[in-house]
Amino acid sequence: MKILKLKNLKYSYGNCEVLSDISYNFFPGELVGILGANGCGKSTLLKVIMGFLEKEKGEIFLDNLEAERLSRKEFAKRISFIAQKSNQNLNFTVLEVLKLGRVPHMKNSFKGLNLEDDKIVDGVVKKLNLQNYLNRDIKSLSGGEFQRVLLGRAFIQHSEVILLDEPTSALDINYSLEFLELLKEEIRIKKMIGIIVIHDINLASLFCDKILFIKDGKIATSGKPKEVIKKEWLEKIYNFTPKILNLENDIYVLPKRGEK
Image: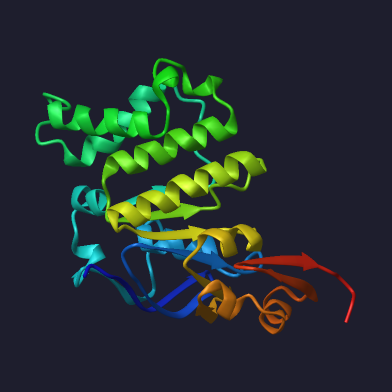
């Protein structure tokens, strides 16, 4: 079984320690939500895993291989990333953006994509219903449409791990639900390891298999949504008194600031 393993990760911005002794194992077929108050280190954790930020201490293993020993091309084959904000002002069509997902797998950059690559792209296009968007300039897309294209690019990349940094923060509820449903299905079918930084506790409870709460750069608690989305933990992590509704299999959190 392929596991993404974080061991004793530490990172600081100058003299400010943002991540402190982060250790956790992520497993295939699971979507893990990273939650916590602003500035607790959620996005920094993803950037350290991706190598955008150089860790001060600790180790990152993927399938018992140290991530930092992988070449950039091999790393890109194994781990994909969707940022909170991506540059939508480039002169690319939707099809060109989607095809970028196959670049790490290209055997010959001069020949470009082969028939197998084209087949993979076509399959994802159909899965995400992007047939009518292929020739559109990405600048003409709405935020929700563009995020779906980025999700398609990640699917086309055929990575073992997918990291997402608040991908639904600018989306309305319909686009958010569609995005997360597609993501969850792909992770389940392809047995990917999914890690998503997300602010919405209710969406996390609906779609995440496990939740990892970070406070002050450390893992405060982790587990299945029903195990950790509890009044005592939300009070400690977010400093507010919530009202939690348990309706059949779903959990709904209603903030009630100032009430005890």
